[in-house]
Length: 204
Image (cartoon, helix red, strand yellow):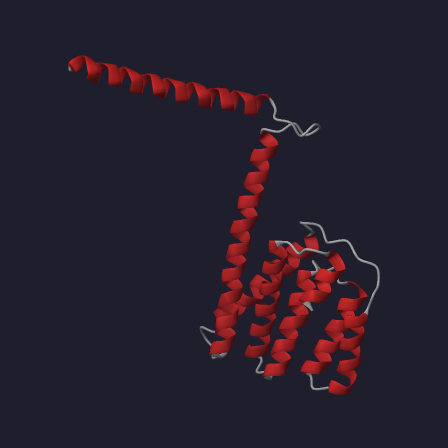
């Protein structure tokens, strides 16, 4: 399913992989907590993860493949195989990758995190199984990593925009002043070191 997404939209950014991991872990945790069998857990994780990987703009090949994967997990092999083969063989036009930020991506990411946190909370009072607890914990950890990476990238973008002219892309006056201040500080420290060296030499 991941290869289908990559063939359709090209290289997949790091945040999309983290979204896919959150979707897969969260869905699998919920399925495990409900006591579903292993094939349905894996199929649900695959469908949710691949949809998140496409930033919720899957296109027909991925939808057909997801339906085939769901049927395969449910044990309907006769209907699943043709759908999976059709998804792999689909040669439609390439799609555009989804935007770096959208309300759909934000809502689903928060939804996956809330499901995981809800399962961990319920697990304090009701036995939901070690697998569900482990998958929910993995969802929360991946979500924390995603949040940290997002904040770091936003800070980096803000810093770049602060020292770059939006129209030309060239360094602006603030960047020039920052570089001048750094050079002056470097020269001042160099002068102080030179003065200390002269004092030491004078002592000899």
